[in-house]
Amino acid sequence: MIYFTVYDSPLQSLRLVSDGRSLIGLYMMSENHPFTPQPDWLEDDAVVPFPAAKQQLSAYFAGTLTEFDLPLQLQGTPFQQRVWAALQTIPYGSTLSYGELAQKIGQPKASRAVGLANGRNPVSIIVPCHRVIGANGKLTGYGGGVERKQWLLNHERVIKTH
Image (cartoon, rainbow, N blue to C red; front, side):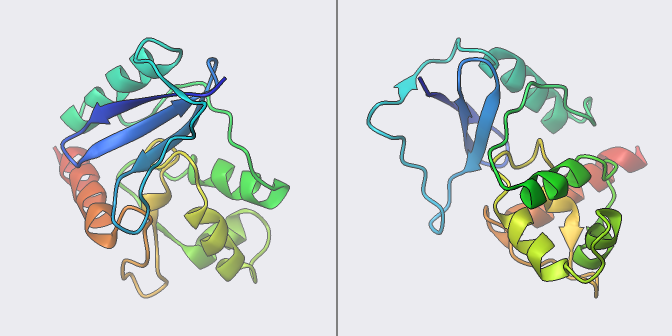
């Protein structure tokens, strides 16, 4: 069974998805990426790990949490899994380029593939794909929209410097 709930963040409403044991999705609503639950999914705020996820997200947005500790079950290829694991090692308030992330996973020529895997991250914010930027320091595409990526990066920089 798959469950979902809504978390109203300062950024926007987020859709959390769970298999009843782990968080399997966190999606931002946008025109480019609308969230439509499957007909057999159930909306239930109390399902594991929704209460903990909402508490940790609230702490993150309040600036008191810099590292999430939630059960995650991320479905993807072995390459995507390596990229998503590497994303979780990027320190709060820091950024890496796609090329640096490719080097970090031992595939220095795979920056485009890293970008594609980054874009398929099913648990944004918690698996911080927003911390990956272009080699020139510019923000590049983000599933929730570049303006939201900028918001998240600014939020982390402000909290980190205080």
